[in-house]
Image 1 (cartoon, one colour):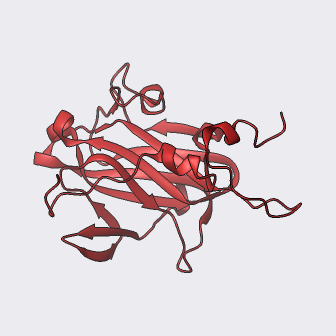
Image 2: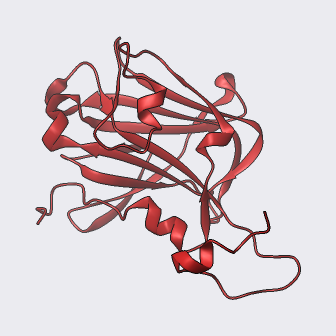
Length: 198
Protein backbone atom coordinates (compact mmCIF):
# COMPACT_ATOMS: atom_id res chain seq x y z
CA UNK A 1 0.00 0.00 0.00
CA UNK A 2 1.38 3.41 -0.96
CA UNK A 3 1.64 6.23 1.53
CA UNK A 4 -0.28 9.43 0.71
CA UNK A 5 2.85 11.45 -0.10
CA UNK A 6 4.04 9.03 -2.81
CA UNK A 7 2.90 9.35 -6.41
CA UNK A 8 0.15 6.72 -6.84
CA UNK A 9 0.57 4.39 -9.83
CA UNK A 10 -1.93 4.55 -12.68
CA UNK A 11 -3.60 1.62 -14.40
CA UNK A 12 -1.70 -0.55 -16.85
CA UNK A 13 -2.05 1.12 -20.30
CA UNK A 14 -3.02 -2.25 -21.81
CA UNK A 15 -6.29 -1.89 -19.86
CA UNK A 16 -6.89 1.45 -21.60
CA UNK A 17 -6.39 -0.21 -24.98
CA UNK A 18 -8.82 -3.02 -24.12
CA UNK A 19 -11.62 -0.50 -23.60
CA UNK A 20 -11.41 0.35 -27.30
CA UNK A 21 -11.39 4.10 -26.58
CA UNK A 22 -7.65 4.68 -27.20
CA UNK A 23 -4.91 3.31 -29.44
CA UNK A 24 -1.11 3.36 -28.94
CA UNK A 25 0.59 5.38 -31.70
CA UNK A 26 4.22 5.48 -30.60
CA UNK A 27 5.23 3.30 -33.57
CA UNK A 28 4.06 6.07 -35.94
CA UNK A 29 6.60 8.53 -34.51
CA UNK A 30 10.33 9.10 -34.85
CA UNK A 31 11.99 8.86 -31.41
CA UNK A 32 15.24 10.52 -30.36
CA UNK A 33 17.08 11.02 -27.07
CA UNK A 34 19.37 13.78 -25.81
CA UNK A 35 21.85 11.08 -24.74
CA UNK A 36 22.03 7.40 -23.85
CA UNK A 37 24.47 4.75 -22.70
CA UNK A 38 25.18 2.12 -25.38
CA UNK A 39 22.50 -0.59 -25.23
CA UNK A 40 20.12 1.57 -23.16
CA UNK A 41 18.35 3.68 -25.79
CA UNK A 42 15.09 4.00 -27.71
CA UNK A 43 14.83 0.25 -28.38
CA UNK A 44 14.75 -0.48 -24.64
CA UNK A 45 12.31 2.39 -24.02
CA UNK A 46 9.83 0.94 -26.53
CA UNK A 47 10.28 -2.86 -26.19
CA UNK A 48 7.25 -3.53 -23.90
CA UNK A 49 9.60 -4.98 -21.26
CA UNK A 50 9.51 -3.37 -17.81
CA UNK A 51 12.92 -4.89 -16.96
CA UNK A 52 14.77 -2.83 -19.61
CA UNK A 53 15.20 0.95 -19.61
CA UNK A 54 16.66 4.03 -21.26
CA UNK A 55 19.62 5.44 -19.34
CA UNK A 56 20.78 8.96 -20.13
CA UNK A 57 24.47 9.78 -20.32
CA UNK A 58 24.90 13.54 -20.15
CA UNK A 59 23.88 16.73 -18.41
CA UNK A 60 20.31 17.61 -17.45
CA UNK A 61 17.74 18.16 -18.73
CA UNK A 62 17.48 14.70 -20.28
CA UNK A 63 15.15 14.76 -23.29
CA UNK A 64 12.92 12.27 -25.10
CA UNK A 65 11.69 13.66 -28.43
CA UNK A 66 8.67 12.10 -30.14
CA UNK A 67 8.05 13.50 -33.65
CA UNK A 68 5.09 12.63 -35.88
CA UNK A 69 5.10 12.94 -39.67
CA UNK A 70 1.76 14.77 -39.62
CA UNK A 71 -0.25 16.65 -37.02
CA UNK A 72 -1.57 13.98 -34.67
CA UNK A 73 -4.25 13.93 -31.98
CA UNK A 74 -2.76 12.78 -28.69
CA UNK A 75 -4.81 12.13 -25.54
CA UNK A 76 -2.51 10.51 -22.97
CA UNK A 77 1.16 9.93 -22.33
CA UNK A 78 2.06 6.97 -20.07
CA UNK A 79 5.50 6.71 -18.46
CA UNK A 80 6.70 3.77 -16.39
CA UNK A 81 9.12 4.59 -13.56
CA UNK A 82 10.24 2.37 -10.68
CA UNK A 83 11.89 4.01 -7.67
CA UNK A 84 12.50 0.68 -5.93
CA UNK A 85 14.70 -0.54 -8.79
CA UNK A 86 16.23 2.73 -9.98
CA UNK A 87 16.58 4.89 -6.81
CA UNK A 88 18.63 8.01 -7.69
CA UNK A 89 18.05 7.39 -11.42
CA UNK A 90 14.27 7.86 -10.98
CA UNK A 91 12.86 11.16 -12.32
CA UNK A 92 11.45 13.50 -9.68
CA UNK A 93 10.50 16.44 -11.90
CA UNK A 94 9.29 16.12 -15.51
CA UNK A 95 8.18 18.72 -18.03
CA UNK A 96 6.06 17.73 -21.05
CA UNK A 97 6.21 20.07 -24.04
CA UNK A 98 4.31 20.06 -27.33
CA UNK A 99 4.63 21.99 -30.57
CA UNK A 100 5.30 21.88 -34.30
CA UNK A 101 9.11 21.59 -33.97
CA UNK A 102 12.02 22.14 -31.58
CA UNK A 103 11.71 25.94 -31.88
CA UNK A 104 8.12 26.46 -30.68
CA UNK A 105 7.66 23.86 -27.92
CA UNK A 106 5.44 24.94 -25.02
CA UNK A 107 5.02 23.27 -21.64
CA UNK A 108 1.61 21.78 -21.05
CA UNK A 109 -0.08 21.99 -17.70
CA UNK A 110 -0.29 18.63 -15.98
CA UNK A 111 -2.77 17.73 -13.26
CA UNK A 112 -1.14 16.03 -10.30
CA UNK A 113 -2.67 14.60 -7.15
CA UNK A 114 -0.50 14.89 -4.08
CA UNK A 115 -1.81 14.60 -0.54
CA UNK A 116 -5.35 14.25 -1.97
CA UNK A 117 -5.24 17.78 -3.42
CA UNK A 118 -5.50 18.33 -7.17
CA UNK A 119 -3.07 20.92 -8.50
CA UNK A 120 -2.37 22.18 -12.03
CA UNK A 121 1.37 22.66 -12.59
CA UNK A 122 3.63 23.27 -15.56
CA UNK A 123 5.94 20.55 -14.25
CA UNK A 124 4.97 17.15 -12.95
CA UNK A 125 6.55 16.29 -9.61
CA UNK A 126 6.97 12.60 -8.83
CA UNK A 127 7.55 11.22 -5.35
CA UNK A 128 9.08 7.73 -5.37
CA UNK A 129 6.91 6.53 -8.29
CA UNK A 130 6.49 2.81 -8.80
CA UNK A 131 4.30 2.07 -11.81
CA UNK A 132 2.62 3.84 -14.69
CA UNK A 133 2.27 7.63 -14.61
CA UNK A 134 -0.58 8.91 -16.78
CA UNK A 135 -0.16 12.42 -18.18
CA UNK A 136 -3.33 13.70 -19.90
CA UNK A 137 -2.48 15.82 -22.94
CA UNK A 138 -5.51 18.09 -23.19
CA UNK A 139 -6.16 21.72 -24.00
CA UNK A 140 -8.05 24.20 -21.81
CA UNK A 141 -11.37 22.71 -23.02
CA UNK A 142 -10.32 19.16 -21.92
CA UNK A 143 -9.99 18.06 -25.56
CA UNK A 144 -6.99 16.00 -26.74
CA UNK A 145 -4.23 18.12 -28.26
CA UNK A 146 -3.11 18.03 -31.89
CA UNK A 147 0.64 18.25 -32.33
CA UNK A 148 3.62 17.34 -34.50
CA UNK A 149 5.97 16.85 -31.58
CA UNK A 150 6.08 15.87 -27.91
CA UNK A 151 9.15 16.40 -25.76
CA UNK A 152 9.57 14.89 -22.30
CA UNK A 153 12.24 16.68 -20.26
CA UNK A 154 13.60 15.13 -17.06
CA UNK A 155 14.57 18.20 -15.01
CA UNK A 156 15.58 16.46 -11.76
CA UNK A 157 16.03 13.00 -10.26
CA UNK A 158 15.51 11.63 -6.78
CA UNK A 159 18.47 12.05 -4.40
CA UNK A 160 19.96 14.61 -6.84
CA UNK A 161 20.90 11.83 -9.27
CA UNK A 162 22.62 12.92 -12.47
CA UNK A 163 21.45 10.38 -15.08
CA UNK A 164 17.94 9.02 -15.41
CA UNK A 165 16.14 5.74 -16.11
CA UNK A 166 12.79 5.48 -17.88
CA UNK A 167 11.48 1.99 -18.42
CA UNK A 168 8.64 2.52 -20.92
CA UNK A 169 6.77 5.36 -22.64
CA UNK A 170 3.42 4.91 -24.42
CA UNK A 171 1.53 7.53 -26.48
CA UNK A 172 -2.24 7.21 -26.93
CA UNK A 173 -4.74 8.73 -29.36
CA UNK A 174 -8.53 8.54 -28.97
CA UNK A 175 -10.33 6.08 -31.23
CA UNK A 176 -12.85 7.81 -33.49
CA UNK A 177 -16.46 6.65 -33.64
CA UNK A 178 -17.45 4.82 -36.82
CA UNK A 179 -18.95 7.05 -39.51
CA UNK A 180 -21.28 4.20 -40.57
CA UNK A 181 -23.07 4.19 -37.27
CA UNK A 182 -22.52 3.70 -33.59
CA UNK A 183 -21.78 0.15 -32.55
CA UNK A 184 -21.29 -1.15 -29.04
CA UNK A 185 -17.67 -1.19 -27.92
CA UNK A 186 -15.90 -4.54 -28.12
CA UNK A 187 -14.17 -4.95 -24.79
CA UNK A 188 -13.30 -8.62 -24.55
CA UNK A 189 -10.17 -10.05 -26.17
CA UNK A 190 -12.25 -12.46 -28.29
CA UNK A 191 -14.33 -9.61 -29.76
CA UNK A 192 -11.31 -7.36 -30.27
CA UNK A 193 -9.70 -9.96 -32.55
CA UNK A 194 -12.51 -9.38 -35.06
CA UNK A 195 -13.12 -5.63 -34.70
CA UNK A 196 -11.43 -4.63 -37.97
CA UNK A 197 -11.33 -5.92 -41.51
CA UNK A 198 -7.89 -7.22 -42.46
